[in-house]
Length: 623
Image (cartoon, rainbow, N blue to C red):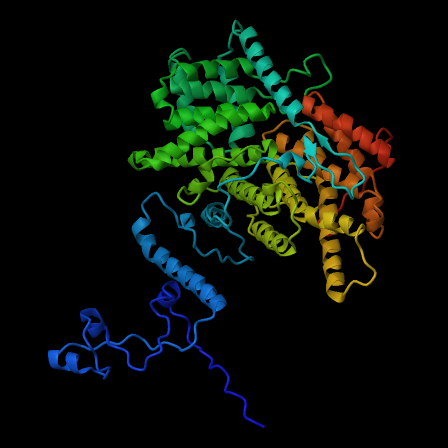
């Protein structure tokens, strides 16, 4: 038998980056003699000796190109090798540029490649360690989010208070109240202006006692959530306004008026009285601050103090659950922040002023993340500046900063998850690998939480509203991540074959485990939302939207045959419990419509929403 021809030789050396990017230059030639580089350049004949005769006579160093293979490089390995080499070179360039780009205002956490290895036993003891870890989360762009498609998002297969497009395999009707929602918001805006005009003649109580009490309420109800400015700076603005008898119409007067408006907001939910439909506490202070803001020269609107005033204006609208009006204000703030960052204004600021601008930037970013998820509008390019703006600094161990660092990073993860899991293109994408990667990121976030803001992941009541709010966002994030898996399991009932292979069986079991994660976290989300819906706070709007979505997911999976092995899908108490908790907010048109729709769904599902709910045992942290 004739011998087989020898195999193609293996090449262990990595493909040269220049060779991969310039294939024509390095294409293997069918010639034995190859001229040296000097003769190539001079276009003279070369005898191909090493060194050649011309270089020897001229006393020039003779250089030949590296030997080339007689076989063209494999295209797949070429592409992979080129990408890996580019990443290595970029990483090396970043490492070499860090000392040059850093300045006195930057922090280790503001660099994208900063190592975040932290011992889990020590758990981020000082505030700057927590800040460093969360800075890495908020500043590193993991995906391309420069644009999110909004066309078709009303048909997204994910329940919300406004819309839901039910796939054919779900036994629940679709709904789309987007137009009605925006009509209501525009009508509420008109009512707000009418209420402000009607209260123009109302005098402002600016006595020292009232100002002190409202200032205290502002610190407790707002600054503990959003550290927009230091307490001593707030006191400084109050002192300036008091010295001018609140009549100078200065930036300090404007800031104090908005602060008093937020301080007036009662944390309790409006009762069943005649004023229930008009929850505008502190509106007279808000109107005074708005009028001062309009009279101040527009050229100074990008000053830090006026940016702070506008952030307070947006946050008041958040407190009163006016998302569309809050969006309008926040978008203007974000635009001006980008103008400041794109110019040299930030470099010319004093250190304290620059630090206050950083606070404005990150609070604006947190507000935008929430409103983007709710309103499904086009995001602005503010997130493109996350890499260059460090998180706020703190001199002490203020719990408010720990909370804000955790909040800013968690909101960014949530926004990215909404995009990555498929809502960006108007559909739900079942991608187990992506879901597991997102789950690891969220789990890593939780493991690095400082003890000041750590919360139990169970039904244990939490009396610190900030911890409770972080918990429900954490649970809602798990629901969003694993919702595609739940849909995948439900869809499989319409296309399951009896002769599935082992790999398909493994995939189905994995989807079932992730679907159970979605159901379990939805149950927890509904059960812990009650304590957050009992009073008004800065996060109540998000709680309404997130908990309602979880309730709808439980209704969809309630007594579904494919989930017969899960006893929790036979229990309607979490659904009924949240339904009653949301009734406290049915003075809001959005919530009233959602509850009316849900009554129909509960009736079809055979869930008695009007009957008393049996006591649900509270789980301990160890259970």
